[in-house]
Image (cartoon, rainbow, N blue to C red; front, side):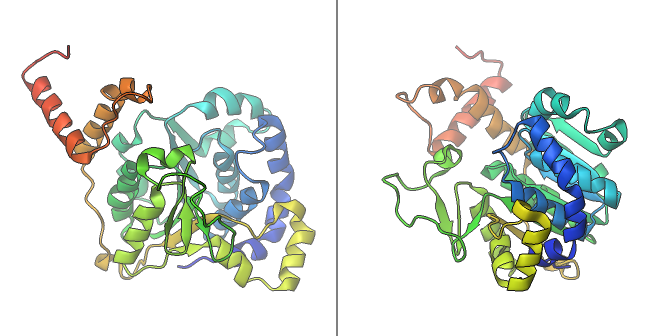
Length: 327
């Protein structure tokens, strides 16, 4: 299985046109005009409709723009959507605003979970029965990457699986400033602040997932592909004009997302990183509970060294084991 974003949007343009009133209503009611570019609603809908997975796993949803479009398409392809996020904006802010647009049957297709740390979320029950899985990887950080690459993907044996990653630009087809913009080099602690970008191969991103995904694809002799390349090389001028005529501003050749497919016949040859849930959760707990105070004050000491962090975690484990109280 290898889905082309360009062919998916062109072949399903009439279906996408039929979604336009619903998407327009969602944007108007939710008020989240700038969270997801308008044309990306249709790009994501095209991928889901073309692939026709029976399970869509969304990691990171914020206010739920992609959540809405995936759940909307799920009704046409008989799919279930599981959305994990560390905030509850969808339930508390977005859903009340769009309640007149969605009924109970629509909501039954969506399992939108608010989780403090989805590294702790078990997914075997949902993933193992599925035959086709679309993973929308929009939560950032190396821990998330470990969860996706070391936990979720090894369960895709015998399935068709496509992984779509947001906020990654193919510099061969979209402009990216070559300068450092007077910023320091990219590093994980500034990744989600949008201060600097990291470049790996032909790709550029603010986020850690690019490094982990590129590393994974390279190890497994897989191609990390971009929707930018697909839209700008696979569509003829006539097809582009047809899409403009059909979708108007719902079509754009800019994408800024990347994807890869797991090779079903050769799955046994793939290499996956280890996923140590206990270690990941402990690291996350330490960062949250013991470093929060200093992170809130920029002029105070920041524990950036991996070795120092591991020593601190070990010392805290000893303190917990012997019942020593934190002073």
